[in-house]
Amino acid sequence: MAARFDTLFAGTSAVSVRNEIFADEIAARPHHPTPALLLTSYTPFRLNRLATGVSDHLSAVYKQRFGLEIPEWRVIVTVGPAWSCTAQHVADSTRMHKTRVSRAIASLVKRGLIERTCNADDRREMELRLTSSGRAMYTELAPLALERERALLSCLSEEELRGFNEALERLEEYLRLA
Image (cartoon, rainbow, N blue to C red; front, side, top):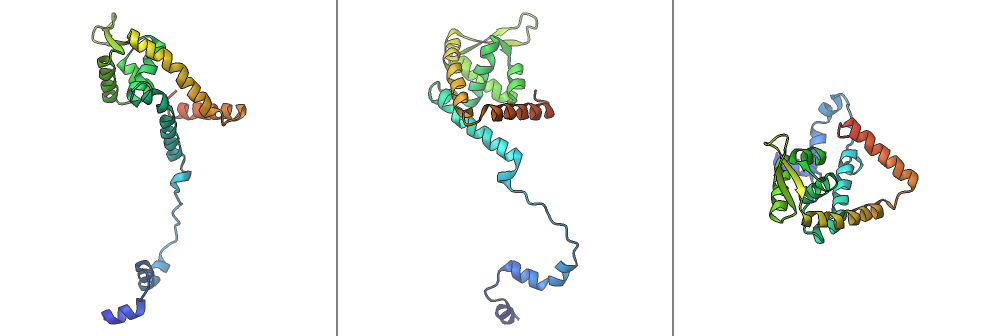
């Protein structure tokens, strides 16, 4: 039997053999085509890939020059313009898990870039503030990051940029991120 099988199907792929053996059964099945999912055309994947690419592009500013990792960078630029805020505000604003926020804050405190103070209204809550070193870093870092953003977006016309920002706003509203 094995010799006959080898003779009949020599040089044929396993899929072809299966299709030959079960041809009647396959033909009797109702045809429900599965829609193709091409990852490179799938919007959530493209957004994720774009976000990673933009992060890598910006890391030249905050990682190489200031020694900040992504979570630390996000904390610095969230606290910087606010002058003070809570870790919960950072987590909500950046959508980072509170554990990542906590580790980033601990690292920044250790480096002397952020300080924690008790909230006058709620002693259980800690306010985050940039130290003078943290403020100096933010003051130097913010214009560099904004210039890097401008350079990145320079490949878009004014009309394309306006449309891009409007689309981002709609998606953020839909996902209740705005």
